[in-house]
Image (cartoon, rainbow, N blue to C red):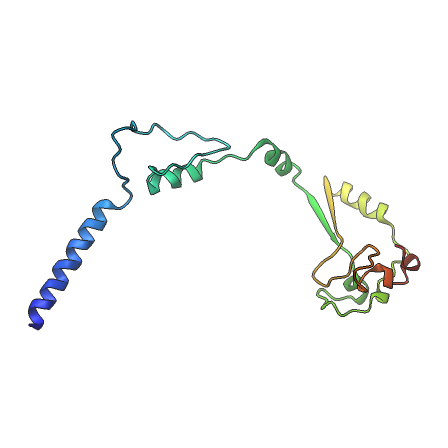
Length: 157
C-alpha cells in the first residue's frame, strides 16, 4: 500500500509540475482580441484582464515619467534643512521630550543658508518644520512643544 501511494504522489507531482510549467506566463486565448502589438514606452500604461504576467512586467518597465516629474528631476540638487532642538543640543536624534526653551537661534541668518545653497548649485530648499522630535517651528496653540514655548522672538518666532 505504501509503494502505490508513493507512486501516485510522484505521478501527481510530476503531472502538476508539467501543467504548471506549460501554463506559466501564458494567458487564456481570446478569439475576440487580436494578438497584441509591441508595447511602446509611455507615461501611462493600461493593464487589461487578458494581459499575461510577461506583458504586465514589460508595461511596468516601459512607464516614462510625466513632464512634471521630469521637471522635478532636473532640479537635481534639493537641500533639506533640519533645524530644531537637536541643533542646539549637538545631537543627531531627539526624543520629543526636549525642553522647547533650548531652541533659541539668537544669531539666525537664513540668508547665509540660501547663499551657501546657491553657491553649491542648489535649486530648491525644504525647511523641515516638524521632524520626528515633534517641535513645531511655528507658534501653535495645539501643542506645548513648539517655538511658542521657546525664548526665540518671545515665543512669536
